[in-house]
Length: 277
Length: 247
Image (cartoon, rainbow over the protein chains, first blue to last red):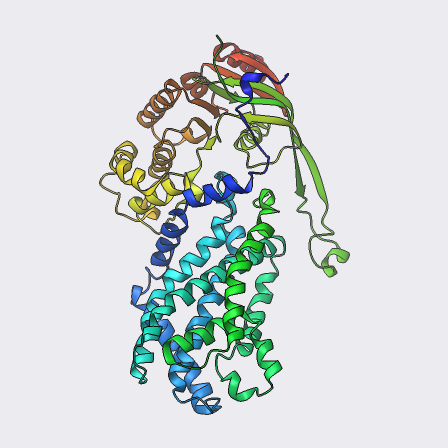
């Protein structure tokens, strides 16, 4: 069949959508990335006796476990005035990123049948994992703020910066999710490695001890600022509890939040046509 | 003046690479990963060309394993082709919304999820929600979890969601085989409506009666090759003559 000028406006299938129209399609389908994960979270605890209450009970139990081990038994609390508040902010903020990224790693495989039946920008799947976990974080946020208040902190104007910090965390999460999702599609074994990586990251992010107190070498402290989780947690503690915030952490957080989503999307899109195959 | 084309397929070839699920030998048992598993290429669609104009409905018939469903998948753009070109006026919609639906959630929530997956906006779905319920005949069950639905009810719901936003090019794979006679009739009507609004419909089935009911043109695919292309009754007659020589 010769090319007919009347067919010029047809789309050829199997060709890569240029970045501009791709981003527009993502934007057009933004409701998908919010409504669907919100419903999935709702469905999660539907069959349990306590139902949606688990979204509050789970973070409480988690805090209990960590407080017993690190606050009471191991006493990593040295040098921190309000250790319970310090611990709660660290654990819950860390858990948000961990869950979002782990969900994203499985998102392509888990939605294989959807990918095989409907055409849409696949990047919405890791994005949905992040939005879903951010929505699921709302009860944890209530727990977090309650603990911070109960343990004696008082609201300041800095509290209003928490949403900005959480936005930075979400942006970093989306970027990391793109990268992990592509790797997770190619090598499912990453699911086995991720929990260990997160455990390592957990101890490297000052979740359960104060990095400033335990690590006195300034160069080492600055190296910690390369760790995005440490930056986010330190910023959140600064906003809510008035703890010190090194400039390196602010720079680190801004760079991770701005650069990783762009790099991640490019990395993810390069294999987009293979997902589901 | 001739009609505007909706789909042009030009020498389309699809090759599947599938891993053989054979019992692993001693060597495979001790080596990790799938690198040692044998794989085989299956040439499922061999050089198929056709052109479909707006307002046409095309049936694709063929025996099981003839490659007709694979061709349909290639037309969605979801399955990469080995060679050849497929050009479309707009991205075809495959009637397969069920993958997006969540069995644990109510029919109502699933209409929203399915609609969003099909690319509708939340507002558009809210406007059409009652119409979708009515078409699927699920008004009394719409707030029950979808896992309590019968297979016919699920099929009706999927069909109602997928066709709610008037796709320009609709692809259907045996979907109408479920549902009772009354619903089949309704589905055929809706397909005609999509066609009359300058849409194009492609229906894959081995049920020639169904093709005859909904399509005015048919393709017959056998062993991945195009055997006939023409008015439905002629192609169906050829297909019947070949598959039931004495009948």
